[in-house]
Length: 435
Image 1: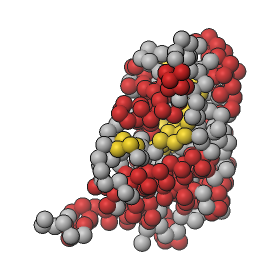
Image 2: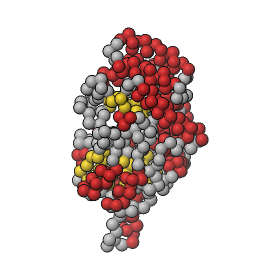
Image 3: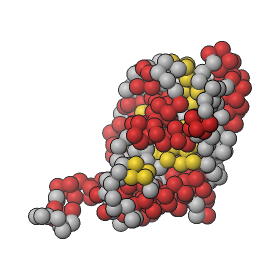
């Protein structure tokens, strides 16, 4: 076939040029979006391998095709590494994204209309934690808990009171914009008290958990979902971790065989993924997940995870010292949520665009009790995973904070932005990323 043996630069120079441009952007700028990290060369190689071509409906040793002499071993290796890394009884490595993983858990354990509790979107939760415009909010009866207005923290007593009042079938813990430690144990204890499933979405902090820089929801939580990029530094994908046994299974009146099936939580999860909501899994991406799990078990990853937090805390301190307001007054993890309301309402879009022009990539984000709209929110969200991957330490956060503060406070100053762009490009030469 014409072009089959050609490399990308020869087969499609237009796409090749765009990829090279992206590589240049990454090398020359400060990538501070907390949901982004850089995949290693090994992860990229696995994700771009010949495994891309293998169709693999089903699970290892239980497929609908032939030709699995190597692919089954790949998936089993990814499963065993995920279980070991997170101390989980069961792992399904086939979900393609964090959102699909969350939906698959709901599909496995809930019925349409069931009551569920999740963190409100503008208080740090995710769309799939029950936002009304999302499938989850339209399919299930989500009750949204919030952070406290004065502190920006979750009040577990209020969560318990809401749970006792609404009697949800499941409580979802975890967030996308909550800069403090999550008390997963307290959430699970509430679930035990009211007879609900406990589900933790650790997509943002999975790498910190793997590296011992954040408490884990396992092994006690019923089901845990996570993406495999963000702080885990793997491919853009996801996994589901769970107990083997369903502690809430009602086997009244069932025979032994049906009772055994009903008690099998792991099997319910697997059936929800395939054939419930997905077809053939992406085995090349599963191989890349296995590579990232192995990397996360190395001693150096623990150093990285703790350094991510140290850098975030150092950056937060520098920002606050220079008059920048932060939601909850700091951070315990990899992310910082800047409250721009002292400078004006709804400035998140304009400030994030000005920062991007200077070579600092963030994302606009709503803050708790935001007086503005989702597309023009009153906050920006910052993260330190990529800065840490590039070798930056606490002292480097002073330089980063200085650029951030100048542009946040004077985001319409074109001369200032241009000067910062030049300085940042020079600064980044000391922290090479991709050659």
